Length: 357
Image (cartoon, rainbow, N blue to C red; front, side):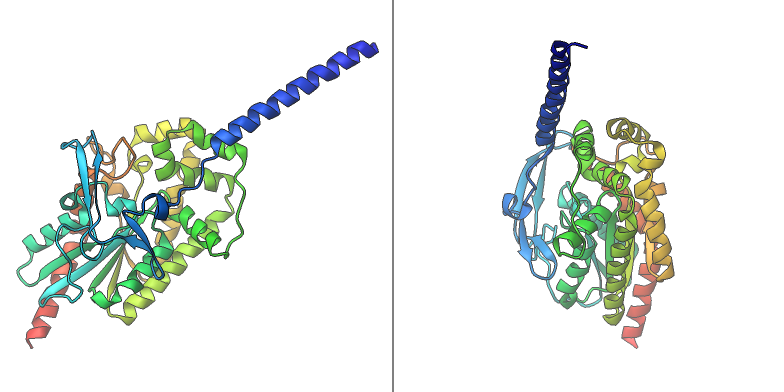
């Protein structure tokens, strides 16, 4: 090969490599988004809290356009204590009242009107079925919550003396967010997300990514972190169980699936978008099964909502953002009532009888 040909070949290789690096760099920069600081960007709705991490602002109101909702919009409102309720909540529990304090992430918080959320629907169903006591079910769900927040939320509101504390674990991102929470605390070393990890998320539906896909891609890339995520979940739930026992509160854990776990078409779309196999798409359910074993070992009551939500002829989650929709909230309320009502009402009757004696 002549020196001229060698120079041309070297120039061609250099051009290809440089072009690839430039294109890759541009794609990488495009795949990077500035981290959301919801305490700043959504300061009208959230505020920092030293115990729970963050809370809703009291008496916050926002209206969002929502074409999928029958009304075409959703009015989101908090009450005097920052709970998702249209009426104020008294810190002191009323006489002859069974108080159930519920917490969870944005799915419990609810992309629905307050009256449509499953805590409010469950309260109505319990009160319609009991002649002994009044039931008060408080929706303390807060967006961006994970296991550490659930523990802090209980400690924040022990003065309300709930009879029951229900933690609604969202299987789509609570495990990964538990890792992120511990990372911010300096308890776990941070990990740099690779360009391919970021691009994989960019190729998929954004609404699916935030509600399930990000966690799937994360544990597919870093499978060794699944065990650490489960440790965090179990540690926090164990701390909650101890606090509940010390304060004579009954703990209930509800396990809320993602749309991908109950909707076959959404699952197929996610597999194509994220380039994941069926077994890789099962990671969230795999984590759930491990958590159920831990809950059983720790004698914690739980309700797995997954099978109850499969096979419905109507959508349980909004297409717009993959959050639990109004129909989904109704199904969750129905399942919780069927699974828990007899025990709740029986215990309230026993407590009522003991009080009369």
